[in-house]
Length: 252
Image (cartoon, rainbow, N blue to C red; front, side):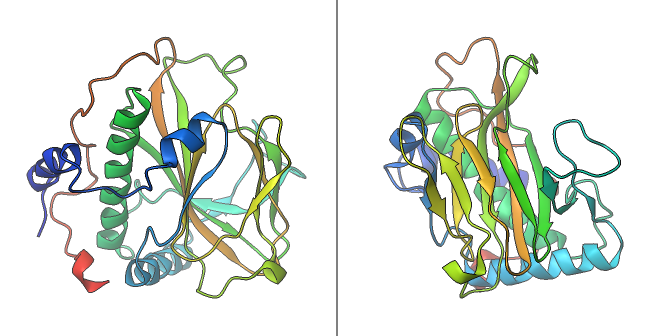
């Protein structure tokens, strides 16, 4: 049984290099305006449990249509997907412990990138489960427009953890297509357990039409807008959404 105190104990391990979740190329890839791909980020058992969590939240009627760019009603030809807030839900619904486990992993990624990129990142994450139905898509966009949305905290790093069944192939569609500055478009298949991370303000991207249901946990690490500057290398671990998860990573 883990606790917030135990999570805090992971900070010196991360600082010492004993806990590393991302390939060493991740920071340079992000700085270059490309998408970093980390395959096998979520173990199969965790993906399975998160898929069950999504099923339970769906049955509870907690998924709703995902709108884009300020569109909140009517037809939205820019995006065809549904989303759910996994943090604010009733924690007796679904597998909260599985969600907590992936939250912990993502917080370690936040600390790792904060150190490697030299940028302070808020301990609070923005997170959604997103489901694309057959034929679902999301047109080309950026996740953060710094000119249009001036805020004290902005989306700094986008991340997507794919929760599809194993065996996703090119014929299934649903690729994440990114447009690196000055380079040809690049596609990433939404393979089970894969994590992708990229700069929220620099990387234009889209979701290609999917040939079957496509599931993911989507989120953003936030950073101060005014001063990306040098961060304290490791700040406090995130305010995790529960104190004692029962799900153990050893099950993977």
